[in-house]
Length: 117
Image (cartoon, rainbow, N blue to C red; front, side, top):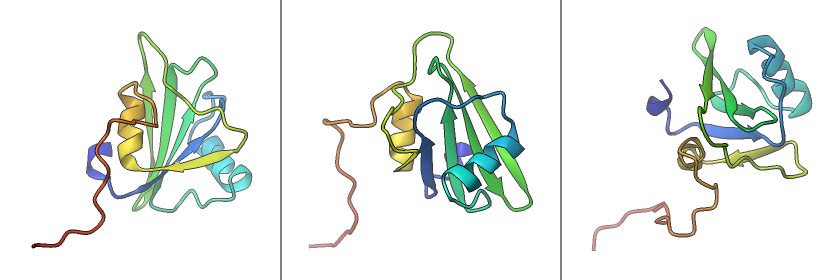
């Protein structure tokens, strides 16, 4: 399901989140803490304190999806900024899920416009 939504905005909840929260609890965090609409066509990503589990909240048509990922080894390179939420691209989310840093110095830059010479 996530591979089909590369054009959606992605928001990361910086720091740690209590992942015992399910759909309703995470939707309340999105609404009240981040002042965002949980029903918008975005992905909201949360990580636990150990940085080895994450949940992604997604609204689609008439209901929520709750994606869950647990690493058997290693940790996610999760931002610990003083801000509550950070907006990233879908490409950066894929980096994060693959165990990479959000700041890939060697990655090709995204091309916004294309012209034919």
